[in-house]
Length: 140
Image (cartoon, rainbow, N blue to C red; front, side, top):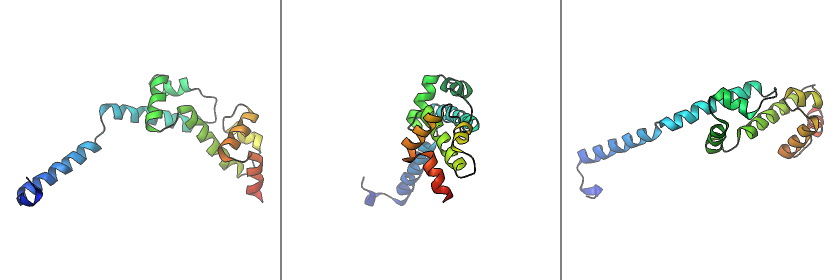
């Protein structure tokens, strides 16, 4: 039946069916709730421990999932690996520290980069400038 031929009651019924469908679509499935929960644990752990030497296995353990599950959930929902997320958090924190009086080497250490040259390389790869040039640009 065309919409023009429907009674007002039928139109309301269609409208409420549509609203119900939209609400159902908003509901998280059990799988999505699991994804949400383990990602939250992992992200919280990374955000609290980015400055420490942490491994993907430790993050997975804290999120109560296997490494493969954690990596799959991150890839599907965050579009990056847990390792990439950790690196980006560290680099974001580094930018904040480089805006202060803390040296580049101290920044690398405080942000969890075990190796100074790795920090410089990763910073330049991500931001397109070395940490020292960034720091000098912020102080001038």
